[in-house]
Image 1 (cartoon, rainbow, N blue to C red):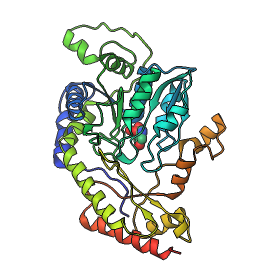
Image 2 (spheres, rainbow, N blue to C red):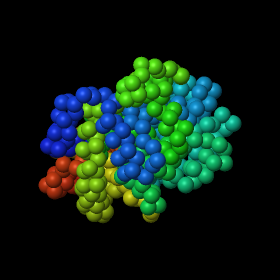
Image 3 (spheres, rainbow, N blue to C red):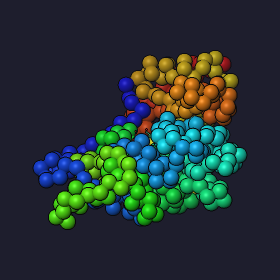
Image 4 (cartoon, protein in one colour):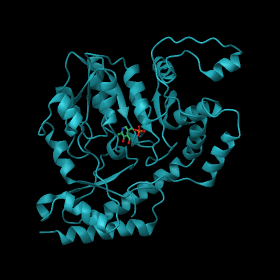
Length: 381
Ligand SMILES: Cc1ncc(COP(=O)(O)O)c(C=O)c1O
């Protein structure tokens, strides 16, 4: 089965990890600083703070934005649950706003309608690697004194109006899970231009303590002070060495994904019932996912039948995402019944993510195209 996503590990990555295993520092050593500095430079941000996962990074960002009980934060239902969960971790309430029909990213007009006197933050998501429309979201935030946390877990290396994702929102969050463009096993990062956010993020990931073990060793002191309540969300030196090595190949990874996306889009352009993902002018997506949408009126089967038929062809398709408000936890806590966010909910019924990763060869890509053509024509009305 060709998976929908897969890590790419080379000998350089393995050597980088082995070198750290032979060094003095397995965690919070020099590789963390090196990775953070290289990452910040790559995405055009002043600061980067590494976390043990994208989810931990989102939690750090929600904390640093000052979210607390009684506050609200607006986000999209078309995402992984972690985007909304980080708001709940802070005791605040996630408020969903529906998505744009073309990109399935948070619709700035819908977000504007959800603003109340309690709204403190907005969390747009760069779905599939296509940057959210940040300018109107930033303008909305400016008008209401809100913090924008961009969930760019799909979008390292993407560009919005010729500027790289990572330096545009007040804080931007990345994930280094193995299906992402660059992996550290588990891992994440928050980038920001604000020194106060960077300082809070560093403390939050280290129990709320004002210095880390290496800083104390370098200073020759045992003294430390816990100044706030934090967590152990540190990323290890082992992981950061892998991340640094992977970062060197990010451009090659992005280039290959863009080639695959172009080939898919050319093949599906005139295929009845299949809609390729749309790309807006002035963005350069990172193509974490390649989600096609089915025009179900043209088939005598639903998405689930077509999904299973593609799996039977050994194509490891997936579905991103079950809209967050439809998960049992959100239904039970907040009373959602379905029907609240019609654009996201309809898209969910039509979506299928095709395989998209650096290591796919040209034959893999052709196999996917062949299977999609075969299966969709077999269910065509
Ligand atoms: C949009 C989005 N946000 C957050 C996360 C959480 O990242 P992690 O798995 O690194 O905790 C993911 C992970 O898949 C994601 O896709």
